[in-house]
Length: 289
Image (tube, rainbow, N blue to C red; front, side, top):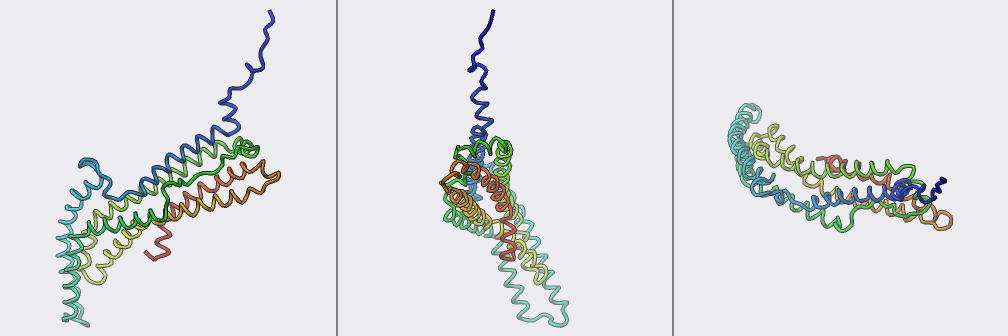
């Protein structure tokens, strides 16, 4: 008995066709990118004091347990460094103990004591300023999008060739950005924890007080990094939009605009991740921090 096989039955499933020509891969990559970038945007709008969880959050652990512990250690070190600074000045036969030197040591001792007692509030306010400044530069409603949804002939050709790479790139680059933003909070919490010890070195005079200066530069860098990240995301995203718009020249190229968008996104995603990752180095080099 002859059996007739319908051509429709031999046709590949629609999901397989969409996958091969790139539509499904692009949608999956875009959803993955948008999901992780939404997390990044939410984190960028958070202050360190927002990490609370009924007594078990990171901020509560730092403010209630870690900081008081290091504050006690800092009080001991403050006396040690004060004595070390006095002995260092007294052993200087060229200058000796003068009224000016004693006054300077006393001022540094008082300043270190005041900063140690109030540094947690001061650091929190500095971080609030950084978050608010980044909010002015960054519009949270505009997710840094990967352009490439122009489903023309060029798009399907490009996605059929580099579709898997496109998906992997979206996942790796977005996670890299997320890690950099989360890592900034880790640095801030670490710097806040050891602040009393670093500030106690102010009373030690020249040389010893360099530790306090190094800590201050590190804290300013980590705090202001969110401003640079917001600026980088905006600039790189708009560069990508400009390149994609410039490629829309009409004519025969109209059929291949999608390929240009795909290629531009393959450049845009690692570029954005790389620039965000270099935000801390930018601050250190540009402002000698």
